Structures are given as structure tokens and as C-alpha cells.
Image 1 (tube, rainbow, N blue to C red):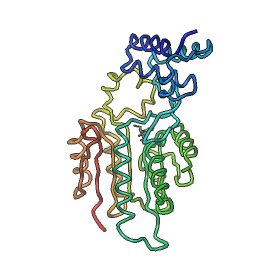
Image 2: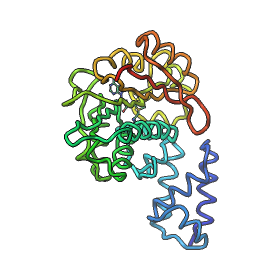
Image 3: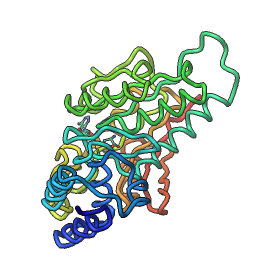
Image 4: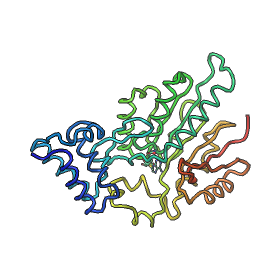
Length: 302
Ligand SMILES: C[S@@+](CC[C@H](N)C(=O)[O-])C[C@H]1O[C@@H](n2cnc3c(N)ncnc32)[C@H](O)[C@@H]1O
């Protein structure tokens, strides 16, 4: 009977041969999924035997990964901002760099809500997550702010053009206990259909920003994700430009937007904002790796 160590060696070698960039980690995650334990737990028991059924399931999952399917879709779960989110091909797999967008949004909301006492009856601070996909950003924000006691003071809207993605976002909001804080809308960017009961203080968006031609060069795993979650047009910024144009219609004076961009798009994004929103300060914020990652724009006023 094969044990965990030997099985991981065989699985890792198969995935290395198939071109995985992280063959050993992939094998560990897949075996953990099969036996129903965290990766660290299986590593702590390298000699533990596996049943024939477990071995068969593991081999089948390794073959799916060898064919290019992302580990997150095979396991059906991805960690994002400390939360286990359900993921499947209805939506993009959340990326670690998007946690920078969450951090910036949290700082902004906390800053606004703690700047001055809010008299009873003050309208809630409204956050709109455009292109919510799996709901990663809005669920992380709602969970964090809800736990910090801001639950009553903030309201969220999450939108996507994809009904399928939105259904997954609802599932994630329900499983993390924040569905009652979020309105979900199917909409094309800031289409008037999105308008909520009040003005919006903060727009956050991780829209598709990969140039169409670059899509062909991505690892095969990306071909399992929805194309409409990745394709940002000729230079990647088509959707960002369209969103910028409509911001004056939805944002309150003093409101702002935080938009994720590619590491090489900072200058182009700032120029696009300056052209479409003259007089609105535009800034690029780096991610944890020091790469340009988020464009912020501020509506003057207040
Ligand atoms: C890069 S994914 C980001 C998903 C999620 N926010 C995240 O960070 O993991 C972009 C999302 O934007 C959505 N999208 C693409 N075009 C859109 C449009 N015109 N209006 C609204 N959503 C759009 C896609 O369906 C996809 O879910």
C-alpha cells in the first residue's frame, strides 16, 4: 500500500513533466483535498497509508491538473484575504495581488467613518464593487468591516455583467455571513440599472485588464477561466476607460474610485484618468511586491 510521501513524489513528478510551475505544491494540495485534510496535516504524516480509492481519486485529479486545469477549480476553493472562497469556472480565481485593492478600500472606508462622529440617521457609506466575479473583494470588505463593528454604517452593492459569476458571489456572501449587507446587480459597468438607493462614496473594481493579444501567451490554466473576466481589449484598459467616463454620474463629491490595473499600465491609466476626469487627482498605488497595481481617482469637493 503506497504512503503519502511516495504518492506525493509520483504525483509531483507527473506534474513537473506536464509543465506545472509548482508541481510539488499542486500535488500536496490535491492529495489534501482527496483525504480531506489540510496540506500541513498530510505533510506531518508522510508514512500514513492511503486506500486504493484515495489513490485512484488522487491520480484522476493529477491528470486534470496535468491537462492544465487550475488547482483552485479542481479543489473548488481558493484562499483570499484569509477567507476560503468557493471558486469554479463561472468566475475568475481571485489573485493575491487583489488583496492590495482590498487594503486600500478598507483604509478609505475606515478613514471616512472615523474622521468625525456620525450623528444618528446619517446615511450609510456606500461601496460599489464593479465586476465582482466570485465576490472576493466585496465579501472580504464586508466581512472585515462587519467584524470591526462598521456593519450598520456601510452598505455594499456588487455587480457583474455575468449572471453566472454573480450567482457564485451570492453563494460566497451567504457562506461568509454577509449577504444581508450586499445588494447584487447584473449590470454592464455603471449602467444606470446599477443605481442604488443613494449616491456612492467608493467604487472598487478589478476589471479585466489583460491586453487581448497577451491572453494567448498566458499559461493554459487561464484558458479555464471566463474570457470576459480577463480580456481588457487592445491595451488592456478598455473597461477602465469606460468606467472612468461614468464616474461623475455615480460618485458623491469627495468620493473616489480604486481600480486594479496591470503592473505596466500605471502611466497609461493616469493619462486616461487625466483626460476623462480633468481636475480629479489620480494616483498609482503599488502592491506588496512593489509593482503598480491600483489607480485611485478622487472626485473634488466636500
Ligand atoms: C478580473 S475579473 C475580477 C473578479 C473579482 N472582482 C476578483 O477580483 O477576483 C473581472 C470581472 O469583471 C466582469 N466584467 C467584465 N466586463 C464587465 C462589464 N462590462 N460590466 C460588468 N462586469 C464586467 C467579469 O465578468 C469578471 O467577473
